[in-house]
Length: 116
Image 1 (spheres, helix red, strand yellow):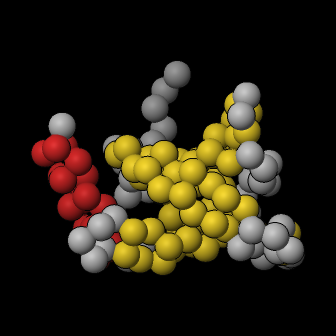
Image 2 (cartoon, one colour):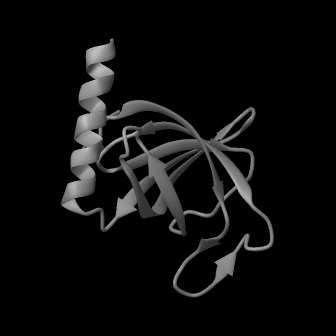
Image 3 (cartoon, one colour):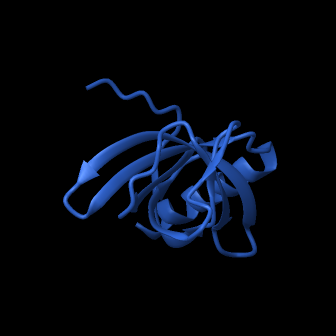
């Protein structure tokens, strides 16, 4: 299978809560929070696992904390979904990530590679 990712994935462990999932026409899943387990991050987006099925091409807001004071908020778009025995594996892309924030991810990747 051909690799379509534009950026290298870095292992990243975090648990986030998604308050709402939305697109330009409507909001869904706004009545309860959805817990997701983030498994990797890149300059392009994040990969995560969730028990709930979420629709493709919908968006959610996320707070990303890479440590050492490097935190940022971003909007993520759900691009890929794969059924797993324990839920779903998702791939999301950052929308409108500022250059300074992608530098945070570069620094984080360097730290991870130096720890290996």
